[in-house]
Length: 232
Image 1 (spheres, rainbow, N blue to C red):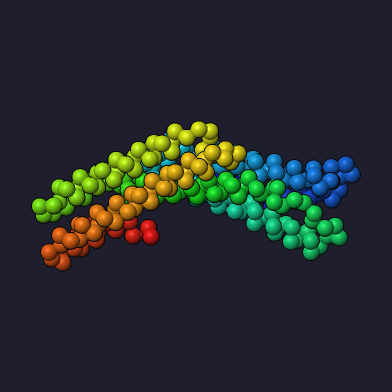
Image 2 (image 1 turned 180 degrees about the horizontal axis):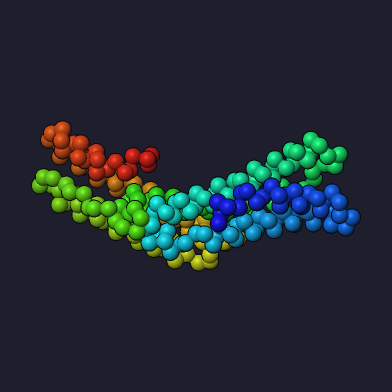
């Protein structure tokens, strides 16, 4: 599992360094860079196994975010252990560390960004469709003559959000495949849709607060919309 990978990395990096320092045939820059790149690919592969796209798109927001954050931590730990090894080697070895770091971590960096994109997808499900962990939270109750209209507007926002989400789920190519560059285009379309929903939600909040007649009602509305407080 991604959380168990970090502790294994220093030993593996040391073993590769032993090959580099001692092998008469394998110690070229290209071969060692390729070996470290294979390490990166293997870490990404193991992380992909721990992520369920179905659970992400079916509203298991909290547990999916934990899985994705675990993968990001694992990738960051890999980079940190590598850089620490570079520092130690440079300090104590008479041979320079001349490997192509950009090439080793290019796909890891892209994978971390993909995980961050999916965390944002989870957060949008919480903010715009009341999903928490496979269940939708209760529909808020709005008071007054305009209450039913505000509820209808809220449900319309949720409906549009679900359509955007299903479009993103159906994108071509693997969502977790960092070589799939079409994801950026599809994800930007999804974010464009979210910007429209943010404007609609702001208008809804404004119209709901226009109907407030006493402190209690105002506090209830604040509580209803509090989940959106982390958004700009």
